[in-house]
View 1: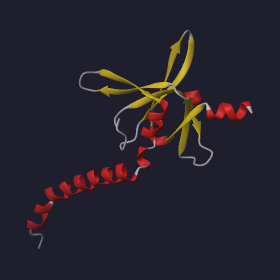
View 2 (view 1 turned 120 degrees about the horizontal axis):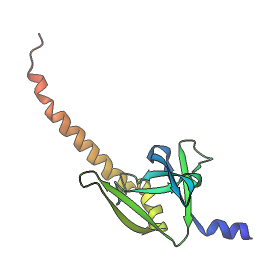
View 3 (view 1 turned 90 degrees about the vertical axis):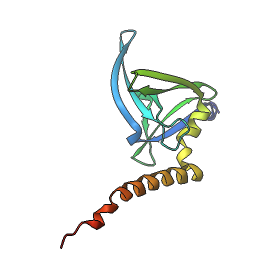
Length: 140
């Protein structure tokens, strides 16, 4: 019974291995700790933000070798960060673990996915419009 209770007290956050970046080692209280940053998906409300996770708590998915996961205690809050390259400052926001899970799962929401695809199509169409003058060139 304690095993089931233990599983329900945690919230699992799933993400693609491509979302992981900036692996590094820090020293805390004389002990070396491996950290990795994980970016939130582009469909998330907090797109451009990331979380820092202790590397030993990032586990490979047993279902898909391109996915990983970590877990947090249910009801806790997690800091998310956004680095501003121009000012060199890091913005920090605290959100609940449940909200963080929703952010990481935002790509599953059809509206967010469609919105993101429309933005990409618009960018592609705009870049094609710039190249429309290629028809005026006489290659003959």
